[in-house]
Amino acid sequence: MCEDCGTPNISRRHLLRVPPAALAVSMTAAMADPASAAERKIDGICREAWGAKPPTYPYTPQTVQRLTLHHSGEVFRNNRKAPAAFRAFQEEHQAQGWPDIAYHILIDRHGNVYRGRPPKAVGNSNTA
Image 1 (spheres, rainbow, N blue to C red):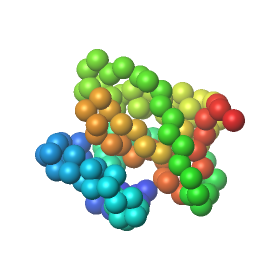
Image 2 (spheres, rainbow, N blue to C red):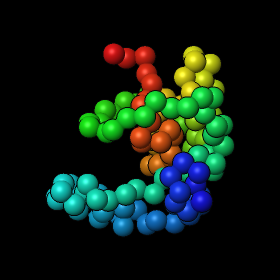
Image 3 (cartoon, helix red, strand yellow):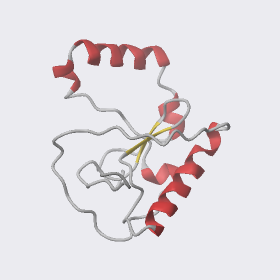
Image 4 (tube, rainbow, N blue to C red):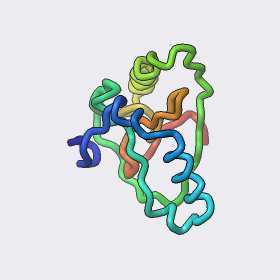
């Protein structure tokens, strides 16, 4: 079980077994019916699977009212190195005094979704 959300751990290998066509159908359905999309969940690769460190101190809680999409535009020439890049991001963010990696969700070159900090924790960034 994932400590962050209490769901079964989803490994990268398990997630890669989802046929791209099934993912496309799910995303298309979500776009056609936004109301039903609010009830959908995307299984993410658990923090443990990408080697995340624990937070250095407790998160500031939040109630999600809106979403902001932020991207770093990092190029993963070798997608196998994505988890190492995420660990480096986390280390850099914690060195800035943040409790954890700034992001709630991380996505690699092949569209695999990784869990960052919990959704109910305020994110951090250098933007206003």
